Image 1 (cartoon, rainbow, N blue to C red):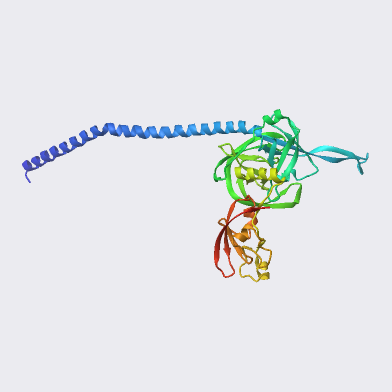
Image 2 (image 1 turned 45 degrees about the horizontal axis):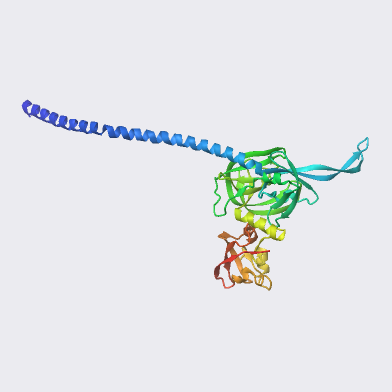
Length: 397
């Protein structure tokens, strides 16, 4: 190739490159407003998101502050007093002689109002002593005598009521509202507790989340470890609690009570358990007391035995779990909703409301927090190894 041709090629490709470069430069300059707008829009979204999160945290703090201020007057402290024997010691300290009795404080807990007439919901173990006197101290420091109205035979719930309170005092009561049972409680949900910390620091407020659901525990009081009861379907929370916690309400950010505390896990931190409550459940409890003077419970209408290996051998069964209705007269109550739903003696209950029956969970655990009129779905194994899915309405006893 001679120099003349090479020069022509160089000039030609230079012109083409120039045209192409010019075109792209014009195109990019034309798109600059759009690119700038996109960058500005992206920055606006980022800063807006940061500002929104900051505002939400501020709103959350304001909501908690408002909730604590509004709910605190509904939470009261309870002082438990008993007549205790007073002893006189000899000068050398060897002998003690009883010289009389003196009423002394033996405990302090937290309760809350559920009606304007002075009706209060608390734990059964708080008012277990029939020989004790109970004094309610409201958030403004007023004191009232209280009497136990009813105790739930199956769950750790009790109802008491103020006595000798004036109408003016009752008018100042603000009952707490309860969560509708249609609204689910979720793990991670924010909750607040108000309680009488260590029976000394009244209306202490703590705040955090629901940590778990449907827990089962063996609960007992610190004064009597030999007496315990199994509590099931509890909520677990890490809201900080200490002795004196029993009876406090667990409140969501919509100002609704969703549970009442019942127990602390021993030798642990941030493991607290509460009995789920709902508007329907509390209304039933109060209605039951109004009509019968006691808290009636849900009734399935069967007698059953939680199976294990030994019982399976006794009843000549090839299965070693689930709840067995012995194949004899009287194990299905005549006229009960269980009989009407075609549950039969000899049936084995495998599931209830989708929960498997096993060595840790039996029917009574599932029914414990239900009320008469609730539906329960049962999966039943028949003698011929067929399974039936039955739905029945719980009765009342």
